[in-house]
Length: 465
Image (cartoon, rainbow, N blue to C red; front, side, top):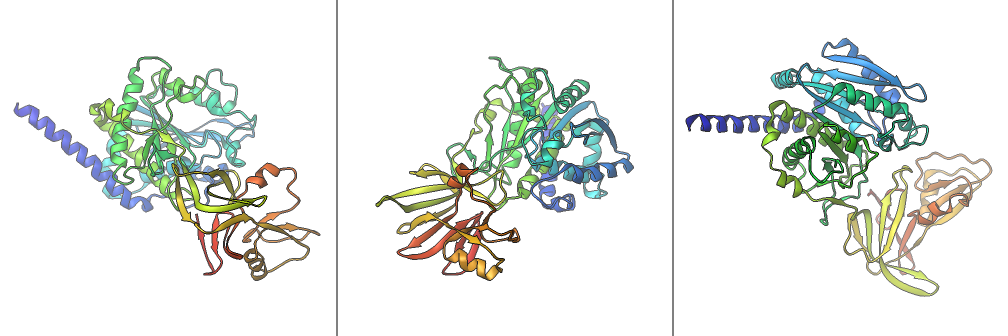
């Protein structure tokens, strides 16, 4: 009995020790954050010098496993000498950048000389062999495109891999034979945690194998996710969800799970006022290091599977902006509606009207009650000469949300309006949905929505949403 209580005490001490390290890392994150990433997107030419710099550090082994269709080098990085193998890859979809940045934060952490984490890092490197492929789809990343040069979704190319990038991923998995695999993605920022008003900042999934019964790989994936969700909940309580578990026979995660890879999908979602996903990137950093620690110490093995089932599925129940109770007029008829607006994932600083009507069972990351106000579309103004910022703001305040450039007029991109270089006939559907709106009270324009900003005309204020 005495031995039993000693073992329980040791387990509790290990759990608290791991928790303390992650809590300290939350506060020390800026020490390890890779500062060369300044944009939301990250490209191959940005990570190449960072990878090259690892050659001078003995804890890293670098291998160029292949090149992409456009001859961009795809590297695999190894660190650690332990028996437990883990495999991470990011940017399978070229327009999903968050985890790639977090990976380089993690590499900075391991190569740092910070004495506070020396013993912790030594334990991880002694227990684990960590294999990382950052940016598996560099050609897609170069143009911020989900798919590769062949327009193939790499995550639907696992059964009979055709793309060179897919072949790299499959051959690496077969060579490594990992105990755990981390499939790192981004999801839309407007996913919710179940039916709540909480945005899904991080969504986990232990992918299905398509079978009725779970195999050992899926069970340990779920156990680890339980530990990670508990740990992460300290920093983002209520903002953790579970991704759809629908089986996809062509996906790498589902196939690697079948093959015993202990797959964990991590989807980076949204957080208010975090357009570049810097806070979500920090959560990735903490989650992956926490996972490494849990695997090294085997603390995940005591997790209860029922707790995994209790994590809510994510649902698309959020809009980036909701305008509540606003009036619209058509053909002399006036009705009151809600308008749901989202920032475009593909067009920088553009916004899209996603839905109009009764949105009472949806949530806005930002919401305004415009009872008593009328909304209408902004106007376009042809410019035959260059205008200064003051003149352009005057146009905006008079309801001109777009400018059409004529006679080779050139203007800077940091305009308050959207720029249309030609009449939008070739892409009418986009412009029909574009959220370029003016909001009136009686005949006075009081608010303007354009790009990802709301202008308060009377107070001369502007805010992002």
